[in-house]
Length: 197
Image (tube, rainbow, N blue to C red):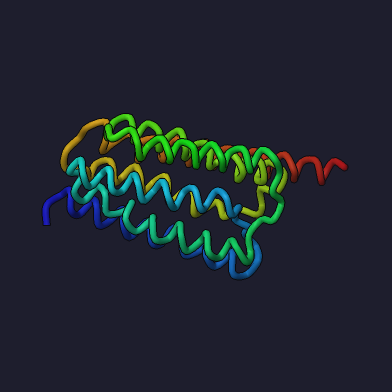
């Protein structure tokens, strides 16, 4: 095994480990995933994974392949145990994601396709961000911390570096760090308001 394969394997193991507490918390009704977000993420991770494969990402794509499967598993769980608070903004984000995916199929340019995937993923995050602003305790913080680490390591496992192979995992590192910051700050704010009120 070379270093890139070792890093790809480590990131893939972290991918698996990161979802175990999240799935456990869903099954115990502690975490309430947003259905739209996980449907969008599963679809986009699949597209990102296929894009990485076509761009010769090698072991750097392994975590994306496993994450695709796990995102769709969480989507299925969210249908039964997820957040049912769907507002017009959530529908708008889902429609925007679907529109971006529709455009992706006609673009036929890998670089533009990956840019569309990143934009769509960001739109898919909006329902979860909106929900988590009010109920940050309904997300499993460790899953997002491990996800940021997984994607960071996967960047070093990429065999052939290009915008196609690096943009999506780099975006996911940043998005996870921002979401972690939101969860931590909102949890602190809610604790402060509860203790002072």
